[in-house]
Length: 43
Image (tube, rainbow, N blue to C red):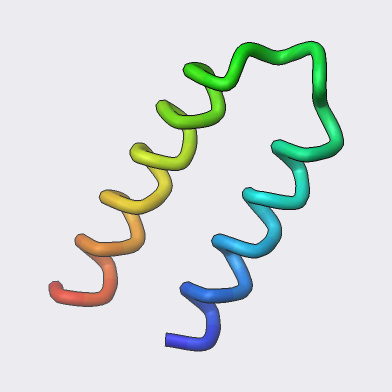
């Protein structure tokens, strides 16, 4: 669970660093990452 939290923190941090990227792209990236991690956590 800690790895999951750290990956989310990293993702959110990287999103904040790239202001020129549309928020919709970040949300898609976040969604993809979330579902990927969810599959891993509840395998």
